[in-house]
Length: 279
Ligand SMILES: Nc1ncnc2c1ncn2[C@@H]1O[C@H](COP(=O)(O)OP(=O)(O)OP(=O)(O)O)[C@@H](O)[C@H]1O
Ligand SMILES: [Mg+2]
Image 1 (cartoon, rainbow, N blue to C red):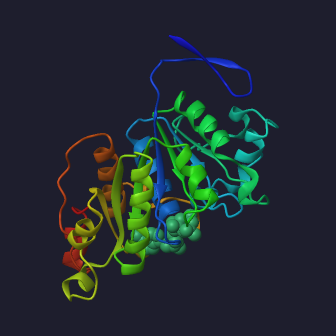
Image 2: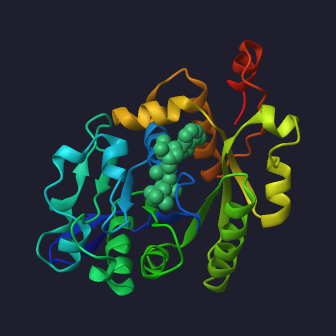
């Protein structure tokens, strides 16, 4: 057993093994980074992992809302970086999971420059000493906020929708992540099988062909995502649903399991039944 010194000076015991630090990024805004961070985080915690979700979208925080934890925020990541509170005090425990899921919220009222890469790296390193997975919800773009979020990660999960503009931005991100040597995996979000079938939407194969990344998830465009987001109850928590099954498969793939993909079918009744097997 080793002792780990925290950035605020306290010491606690760790097993010696560090958790994985994964940035969830996209380039283009609004493609589903925050949704993915919340749902994959819940799916990993459901598998028994200790997970910390870090909202790195300074000034535009959202992850707290998607998780339904917004009323419990006392401190934020900028206050931790400035040494105004202990990291432990800023972490919000998600009571739906016993000691397995925490949120480190972003500052809402501060600008993006309030945090730098060195501070972010130190915070996520400390979190990796206490958790199996640290997922970092990245802001859109390739500016300061992106660089910060990436500085705190050893791996990346790239989220894109099957639209040309999103894929083009994603491709730029692949280049930036490659420069930093980050292994990067892909989630294709908001697929609409009926449009793919009609030739009106790029298929997952097309997207993978352009980006050349290992695929870990195909998530359909589904109103339940919006509905559950608005209620602060991530879809991955609703056991027995197709979305929960899909995010569970993503978690298993991140854990290194080989889980086959099934084609998503259009949302007829038959399609829904079939879709429950997809992911
Ligand atoms: N698979 C999906 N099906 C339907 N709606 C979705 C899906 N994924 C995300 N959305 C919706 O798309 C919107 C944007 O999602 P989200 O906030 O996760 O994107 P983001 O990439 O984090 O955005 P930003 O760049 O602003 O941080 C939200 O309203 C969300 O509910
Ligand atoms: Mg977001």
